[in-house]
Amino acid sequence: MLDPTAFVQALNATREHVYSARPDAPVVPDRTRRTGRGDPFRRVAAAVLRRAADRVEPRRACSTAMI
Image (cartoon, rainbow, N blue to C red; front, side, top):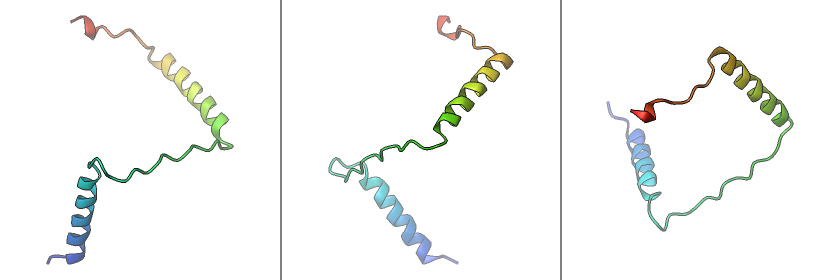
């Protein structure tokens, strides 16, 4: 059994996707990022995780470019 509302939604989504590539498509400006209370914690957590990852598997120079 076909659902006509699903067909209409799929058609609208496809049309919106295709029309978004047009040169005269409306442009939505990027939202400015607000600094939050968790930002310092996120930076510290990222640094700690990076150090832990380097201890588990140190970074090496990529040798595949020389092939």
